[in-house]
Length: 210
Image (cartoon, rainbow, N blue to C red; front, side, top):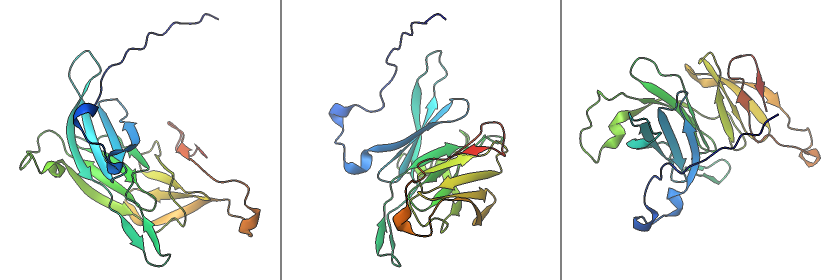
């Protein structure tokens, strides 16, 4: 068995730290490439999603495409609990025609976004959100904080996981989900483990792991 020597080289930095005052809301909490690596999405503590598009060059470099506010802070009055806008995870779906789709989630709510192609003309430089539109909102299905989402290979369903449960959703039905894993003990004092992540198999939509 031969050991290969990899020569890793720094490629690109998004934003010059010397010129930017970084606030708590600017801290990146999620990053995700699309299936082909043509697009890159980042999510931050402020609930924003920023999209980058790959340049048409032999080097793997990306340019800013658009940004939009995916989640806002909420207050759960039943539990007297503030729900952060922080993006926990982003997942791309396969593109259809000239549009792209992605899922983003904070602790309680998952949103499906449609990202329009280059043929969309932005109204102004300050109205960048015109390139992204919310399609569906998946909510009220998790008692605990959502830590991960994953799209199945059939591109029809996805799973969302919190500390104790994994739910299955249909992308076309935002108001109904099915609980497929539940590790909550009858007595919470007997709790010995939690779920931290769940992921579909990349090719078989009947397989997932947590």
